Length: 201
Image 1 (cartoon, rainbow, N blue to C red):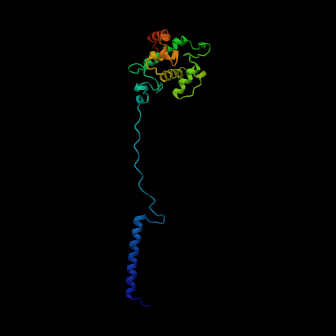
Image 2: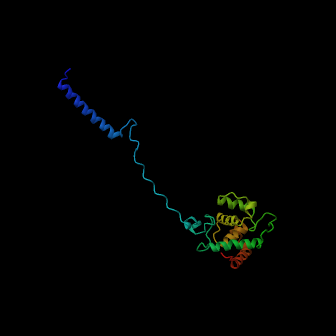
Image 3: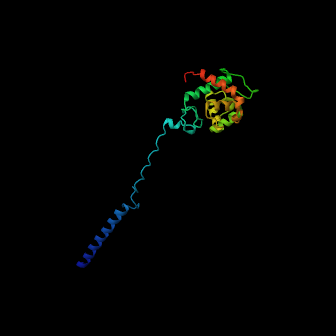
């Protein structure tokens, strides 16, 4: 059986054309029956990690005053320089005036005020609500660390910013501004205790 030379030429041309088409498909779709290349598009560039917050930034309180991370971020400004030492001395002085340094003082105000800071249930509710925590009053009022936070939260909630204002607010409640005359004696006691209280802070 003879094959005419023209048929061979057609087969040759068809073969070249098919090879070209297959090569184009392979280049565009990565070859294979699975469609596009398994590698897929390049992954998006990773977002830069957020800058770490420094200890001093994390400890910034109201109005940008620096307060130690051991105290609430929503606490008021203490002193002209936000001194942690002054803050601690204030709290120690309040405790000394309220309970006389006794470890287990009797409840005051007819049994309404308990703990070494003599805190009432309503006071505790206002303070912890402002601080965003759910602490039990009957147990928390005997925890000095929690009471310190509660005093600062309570003061911040009602606009007390200086040691004097915090002490007066602690003693007379939300309307402390209108009760200055009633809290003069209390503030004198706290102020005197602050001058005589260091305790290594």
